[in-house]
Image (cartoon, rainbow, N blue to C red):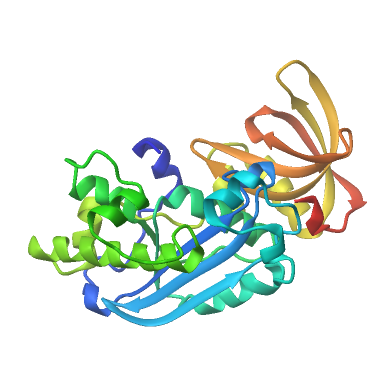
Amino acid sequence: MPDHERGNMRSTNYSKGHEKLEDITFVIFDFETTGLYPLQGDKICEIGAVKTIGMKTVDQFSQLVNPLRPIPQEASKFNGITDAVVRKAPVLEEVFPKFLDFIDPDAVLVAHNVPVDLSFFIAALQELELKPLKNLVIDTLYLSRKLYPHYRHHNLDELRYRFKLGYSNVHRGLGDALATRDLLWILLDDVMDMGDDTFQGVLRFHGLPYRFPKIRDMVAHLYSSDLAEKLETAMLSHRALLLEYISPDQSTSRLVDPYFLLQLGKHCYLRAYCHLRGKMSTFRLDRILKMELTDVIYTKDLSLY
């Protein structure tokens, strides 16, 4: 993702700049999913995470998640997780609060290719009506590109091979979280070898950390404050919305049940149940000409996601 788009997901307000790396709690996490696109209904099917203080591991988290939908063969070939594997696993609303409890409020979150994992993280928070986290998030993929510009590839498989990060369970939640942890430690070592053992030293290469956007903040700076207020009210009170929407070929009126928002690049998207189409649909907010709150109350059905 280009820098000008990454900036939309980050904040200039952070307080860990001069904290020593050895004192910082990191939670390195990885989601295995049914696909790459939560806006199209893909779901988390496994969560793996490792908690460290500096370069000392203090805890681990690993849990399969029943996504309540079939897992495509393409995803199963990649991560080995099939419908049979997750059939008896708990659902997201049981697992995700435990994962959030695992994350210390002041921990720095770490993932490899953050925009993908963060989009699923935000979708899960909004699906379960949980508040956005205040944690900072950094990306080992981006750090690798900045620290090793001479490397041609920076995907986790390539870096796993290059640095001999020998873990079983490749492309599984905990296995990839452990590999990302070791990659993070290599990156931190290189930053410290350059004479800076603080978080500020990491940010000199990474740039500003990612943050979890709030619904109103995510919408208001791109669209009208009236739209942001109506969306927030509808999602919190489970009230349907009547939209005037420009699709590629026409403008139509839609009654929708709003479920969650995501920001990808410079655009925000609403994932909602569309009564006109009788299915979950994705609406780009800048294509909504008009939005009205209704008195129709809906109940969230997790199987729709």
